Image (tube, rainbow, N blue to C red; front, side, top):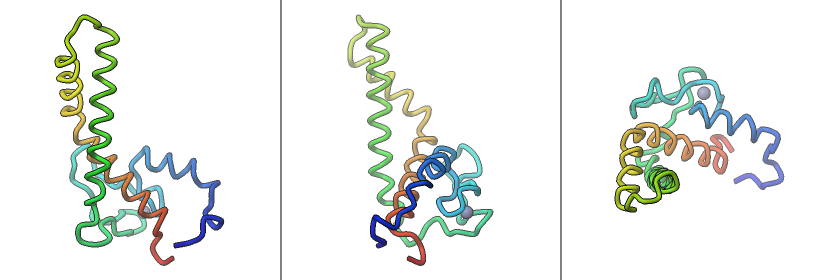
Length: 127
Ligand SMILES: [Zn+2]
C-alpha cells in the first residue's frame, strides 16, 4: 500500500462525483451498471478495467449494502414520524422498509460502487 502522503487529495471531488454517478473507479467515465438493474458490466466499457478483481470480491459490499439499507429505512421512518407524529413507530418503519424495497436495486449499485472505490483507493492495481 502506498503511504498516505502519496495520495492525490486534489482528486477527491472528482472521485466522489464518479462514485455518485456509479462510474468506473479507474477512469471515472465508464458506467459500472448498464441501467438501474443489479446486473453490472464485467469490465469497464471505456478502459477495460475488470470490476470483479477476484472470486468473492463483492462480499464486503454486502456489509455496505446492509448499512445503506438500515440508514435509508431509518431516515425515512424518522421523516414519516416527523411529518405524522401520531402514527405508530411500527408503521413508520414499515414505510421506511417499503421505500428501501423500492430502491433496493439502487442501494445494491451504490454498495458495490462504494466497495470498488474504497478498494481502488486502498489497493490500486499495479501499486
Ligand atoms: Zn474505466
